Length: 179
Figure 1 (spheres, rainbow, N blue to C red):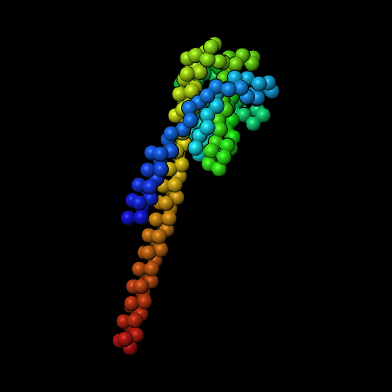
Figure 2: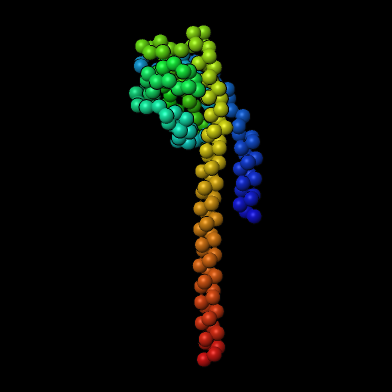
């Protein structure tokens, strides 16, 4: 019964939490040192969980790091563009349970993609980032469900141990009464 209550509560929380901010275009300090046009989204979720979801999203690409950014250079990511590009992102903590994702896209050699120069790619990247809130929430709900399952499994095992102990004590009591 408790498990059903927890799941219901989580699903209700999920329904209210998916209303994330839309991805906006802004200017941030890039991993190459200068400022450049970036896509920025605030997401409800722990930084580590947002990072895990982002890593899973780009798991097919070869990644590196540069100045705190995850870097994917000279690769095509079909959900954004069939053409090769450089993709940079980082996840920052933005509050108690808020994270901020900053993403840069380049055609190479610091040629940053903008809405004016690459509208389709920017639109595709925005769609990916806009869906991030839902994915992070699902990821966190799965983590919470796994944790609750472990609690339930531990309680069931404890209950089984107590029942065995009760049977053992009951047999000892019967034996003592017989004696």
